Length: 407
Image (tube, rainbow, N blue to C red; front, side, top):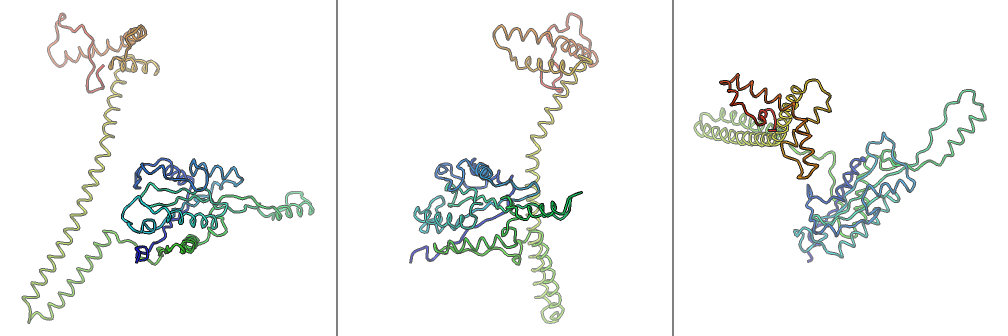
């Protein structure tokens, strides 16, 4: 019996309301094929193709959609679009080796694409904006952008204008009543997609379309399905269960104390040890998670601390410049800072222009160097024996290392 008759293939249908920012994210995912959350094989990216809409991507296709006559959604429309990921189980595309990711049977793929495009155009018509096929990930799938539209009509006339005659009022009401309406994007105003259960109805419709290929529509999550249990909830429930178990054991021990006192005490001790071990393992796991989070936070804070240190050093340099120059315009302080930076890294070309710049910077830094030299001499006098006149340094005095880079 062929393998595809044994293993059931299921429809993949992920549909969500989308904002303009989500359309931008979709556009980036299609154009910038970067392996982040998806397993993207760049060697197969060239096999991807656009099946409907502008080949430049979803945003370009949406721009073409507006140029064709559809009006943009109102500013109050928070999620006016639809993003859909359409696919099928891996055993449909590669029935003989479903575990070999990145492979597919060409005939099955083309048959699936024919059904998919017919179903998409049937369900969304001219509201279908963009459809792209991705073959550089684990299993072939489609990314679909839909801009649901509705006819936006003028508000009904219910008030008479000041000094308006009966005839003019009636004419204005009649004009509004026969207005054809403007095709406008807006999922919340769409005649069917605004209704509760509309996404489930779409899934069922696509399930019927793919039934001819042996693809099951799947079993959607319902509101009655239990929510995933958190670790905290599990610990609480397990503690309550163990406490209840302890209570049952206590009652049993009381009833058979005269007959099996030794055995009951032993069983009780074993149960408590097991409970303590389970709780200890759970607590150890939580401690490990906290330790991991602390390491992650420390990793993120490390570059921030380095930036703070650099900023403190820069503030020290600027403070010394202001002390050396006094009350001068900010532009002059910026010139001195730039000259200091060039002098530090010797950013001078070996040509007349470079020598001219060096001479200019030397003149610009004259006052600053005189100030720092005086500060250096004063520090030496305060911290140690004063230098004799012949011992005074004749070369340029270096600024304090703790206040910024050496100049």
